[in-house]
Image (cartoon, rainbow, N blue to C red):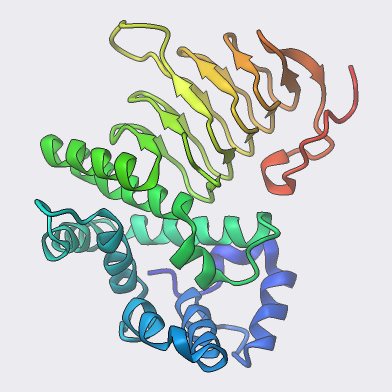
Length: 285
């Protein structure tokens, strides 16, 4: 588990001010922050007390709370919560990077989404975060050669959260799925660190070919709502894809593309547009 504010270094002033407001020490962990936020919310809105106790305050570690939350999202009549939670806890115990990545994803939402004013809100309420962390569990199952169960997790993520991400897809950390509904990520896709994706984004293949056939999204890329990126192509570091665009060829680093088919229309104002969430074209070429 992340024992410091490592995930929040990029937003240190914002995070430290929040920590001071909560009355915590500067070295507070992500879990410390969440517990303080939950206690404050339970005090200010007593109706939420039982819910916050069950979801956060009754647990002693971030990983335990995460397993509980994901299990409540993915359970079904044929896959009860206790069974799913056992699998999630097994994955978290075997691979500490899963919980670390989840903390970085929380930091991404907190710093990039103006509607997110505390970390616990993202943890409890944002299905993009839930879908990301559930996919990380499914990916661990896939890599552990437990592929039927991984596919079942994928199905539950799709049905319950409206996000269809193949368990073989490789994810970095510090990723934000904003709104998330309708996102599709294919089997051989790669999403590197610090990427932001909005709803209805597709990282798809070109047909029924096999092998490496899905997009590679490099660090700091912003994928705007409804864009479609098709085939084994690369969207270069710090690039931005406009809403509704269809990308069929490689995108160079640090450019803005838009249109059907997408063409270079400018350059982002920020070298990592995923962090600023600036959807303007930027400097026109």
